Length: 375
Image (cartoon, rainbow, N blue to C red; front, top):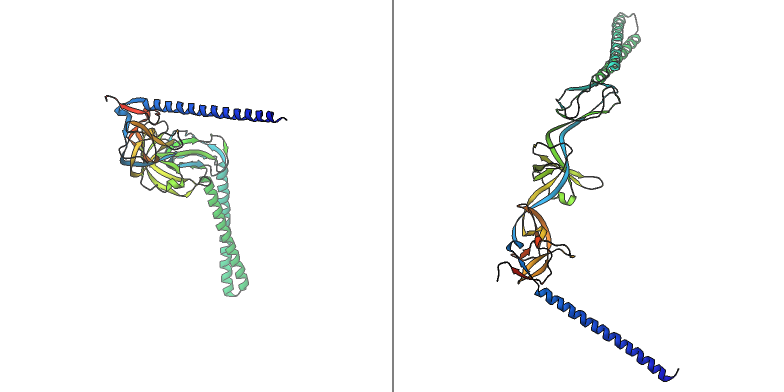
């Protein structure tokens, strides 16, 4: 290749590189100019705020609370089960019926069990007769031994026969008691006073041993069984109060912690907390409920929870600083309900800072602010 061709190619390449660099420099200058223009427009933008659009952050007492969810259960409840197998008879109670403690709810057909009791009683009578015979034989042999007519060995045999007859009689009596107990178990009584919540069998049905017949609940005392994490359970104490709202109810119910399970649940490691509920019409066994447990008070710099924005990696609030909007990163603390509004304790904010409320919406940092009515 001729030398002048090489020089021409090199000059062309240098010209292309220089042209690209010049164009890139021009584009950067245009972008900087555009960004500067946008910044100037933002700085020149002015929004007007009302006094109600600002919240003054100040230190105040905040009620610390713990959210609770769980199921309402009756303290006293029982499932009546069949203690013997057989045909169910006389069951007339249904869901919602009131029953008294000890009331007869139903019975298992007693025919077979009455016959067994009679059989056991007759066996006991026969065993008793054998005891009487053995006793007379022993008494006679004892007199004969004293007169020397029989040996002491014969008397020992008579004594053994008497002891065996007495043991058989006691065994027959025990068998009769077992049969009597089985006959008594054919009658199903209510173990407590309350309301029938479930009827699980029908009259005429043949039920096995331990078959569930009816469930009874006493609504006089109700508890909320709520689960909390191990970390949350550290702050829970006996006697702490809570406001609970059950599903379907608009008014809250007062409750207080009466028991804390000393063990955690297998798998979840949750701790069960039991709260006694004040008697309130409408509460039912099995209802789902939620509420807040009051843990105490703590002082903190408070702002409305709705004013905290999370559209950046770190939570922040919009504050009024030197007539313009600034974004201040905050760290959230405990929350509290005050006059129907949720406040949250924050750090990273100065006392008395003017915070924009949620209704203002998102505002760019650096936007100039003008208060309504100001000249």
